[in-house]
Image (cartoon, rainbow, N blue to C red; front, top):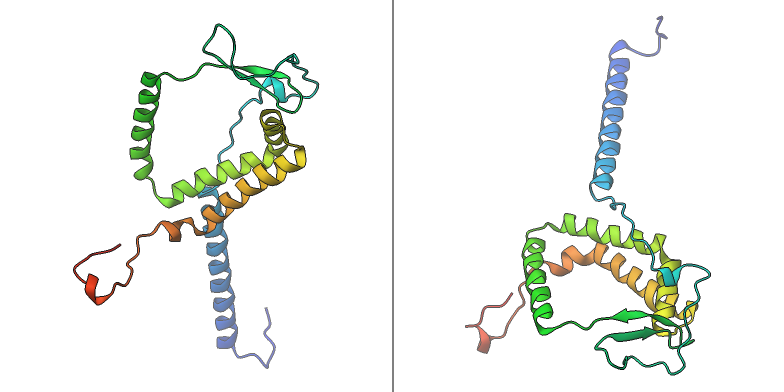
Length: 192
């Protein structure tokens, strides 16, 4: 290749080296960003919606809706807006509550060992699930509480999504231990 007379050879070498280094740095940054995004990417999972939330479902309409079922300890769940029976729930026993609390305590010990990066991934997974299934979630909230779809979307979905987004963005800083200044009379106290 014939070089133009106005470019000395060493300037072309520096230009080639500079462009090569710039390309390497750009490629490194792209790969690094891609790895960071994939490292905290939400996990795909599915939960089948309840039968009552499926389109076209019609439940038995109760004559006198109440949570008590005569002759049973079961709790009767119904749509307060329509009186449609949703199902029955058996109340927990004291032993059942103790077992649930013990399992929660074990789970919390494992959760305490996780990094915020791992926790952020769980939060992103929850956020993605809620956004992908907001119509079904709103339907269930309407059935359970008698709310309208707009109320369910604004009061349940929007609030939950915003709290998750805030925690994903600011949670690590908010959960970090911090020292607070104290006055002279309380100097013997240690605070964090």
